[in-house]
Length: 464
Image (cartoon, rainbow, N blue to C red; front, top):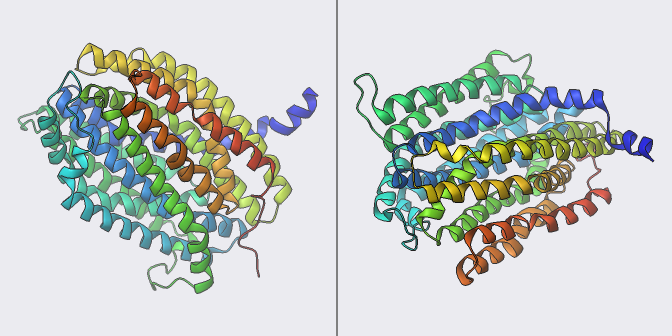
């Protein structure tokens, strides 16, 4: 029995390969997330209103980021399988589609943030709490967002490149680009937020300037490297000599990619809606949730990027027509992902006792944030399994099913529960957060049976 389990789920040599692929991705995305939330940590030294204003805007920027990832992910399914097949022309056309999608999404975001900034930020502000000035939080949020808008386009462009570079298994360069970005952000944050070396203290505006500068640095490094190393990125040869995408590839990407793109968008908006449900309990909850999500998002990168490895490894095997091997590797990667996150969860529980102490805010906010972190850590292994299931389904092009599994599930089950518990019951916010978080058990059960069914085992780029 033990031998059978070992053969099905454990392969130390393969796990080492996965780590070689995943660790640069984890580091790169940890750095990318740290760029976004570094402002939050440093602004947290200034005051509760400043921290809350930045936190709310970062929630809106998070929705934009997820929409960009959704825009590139649909074409990324095809790009990965094209690469596994050795079809660089097909990968080039998938890359073009990503660029178009990213530019359109960035344009829409600029319009929304430009005209609806006050309305969007105000959704998260309520006078129901016992601490903080909501008018000041709104003012700081507006100042931060106006500058952050300048970083949307470079982020969008860099993600189109990074997503495609990863399809080829090159994860080290995006990591270096993100490292350069976080160093830029860290130095400028320190100088511009607090005013060092004769530079005025710009506060939240300084934090925004630092982040935008970091986005441009990251984009420049990735784009320049990709175009000066064409032997490693053959799909870029002649990529801007034309603008067309062949009809059969375009229709395939739209058919498979549109549900995925809308799934990511609806899921991101859903997360923002859930955060807004918590926010009705007052600025104290907004601040505590912000502290909790800062550390949670950094730790969650482990299962998110291990899931991304499933897309790469399994997607390439499916594109090469090696279906049985794809199933075997998928079983092992899901097991490895959950096992890793059980360990990460323990580390997060320990870190959660001390992380809130970094912030210069009320003790009640720090205590509440610590409890939120504990709950997020306990649910992490469940999230690891459900996300691994999601990426498995996605690698096989089952984007319609992933739409139901992810965003429809969020809007039909999680959001109504969060709305009812937060707005229409007397439960403490900790209990509301606990019950909403552990709805993940339902998703894990659904994901298990879908993976067992093998509906995802298909090659979507084989010749007609």
